[in-house]
Image 1 (spheres, helix red, strand yellow):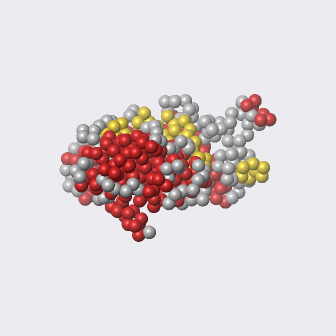
Image 2: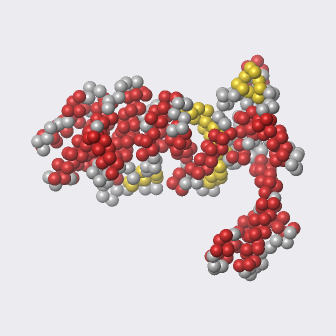
Length: 470
């Protein structure tokens, strides 16, 4: 409306108004109400006609907002009746006062704390709160999560009773209201993030999910949920450093299938604290991509997936190093925003994970990794000064190849021969860690990253100052 008032009524603005009318006509209930009140837009409308029409339609929407919402919900529930339970409040025969009825039946008892609690059972979903007395999760509430009372022989002592707390009952009952719609081609899917620690947490998590899915670069394919997890982890673990993130459920509803897909997620306290203590490093490696023709890989997603399922190793780092080197070739089909500095971040995190979480060993000082990085940069200066820049990539390939298979002898032979050719002293750090594979690999990749890196990287210069000053 403001656009109509502030801009000249040109061809483009007139087309926007026409498109607005088409959208109004697409909502049968809104169009019916507009026709009843003789609200119409003339065929050859002027700016005044457009302003009047838009104002009247907005007025109708505001006056009948609740009725429109309830109508859309009913339509939606009718569409997914095979997926959602038969107890759904808005599928009852009630036709008026739905908002007040819902508040009185579900919200008010929670706010006023009048619901009775089951003294013997805790909610099976959140595991945090006592179950609500006489509130049982069955297929009538949520068909894909509840228990079917007719199949009593599948349950212990023939009692298909799954205790659920008042908050989780409300959450599952209202899943339809929080769904995020997403389209992949012609396929429409709906998503819901069940973070059931509190209603506020539930709202914030799904709001974040909607924002994530609206980003063009975060198109939801196989890695969509994982991409959300990455950002969610970095957001929440900074706030919840001493707690585990458990029982997070992602619900995907595809109206072309019989049942939705469920994705479970859990992270231990140890890993939560690891991410929190290294938050700044994790933050620096988000947003990386590797594009090979029309295929895009998000390295951070692959890193987090391996971190969460305990398969992270230096092999993944070796893959990233190889992709970066390939992208530097003339006419390469690989395009990436990875840099040697970011590869160093991956190296540091991989080393810390393997050494402290997987092996339970003692970490060497992180400054050693940066010192080795700068040793690599010093050697690069020698190559450039002797106009042998073409040898840098060749040496990096061979060093990475040796690190990938854990061939310490080949790696050290390459280092020794190269340093001797320039009458330079081999860094003693290599020798001190030659019997510790994790330490050696971390130092080796640090050296390669420095060899490939640029002094112009402001972040690296800042890191160098820290190492020198300390």
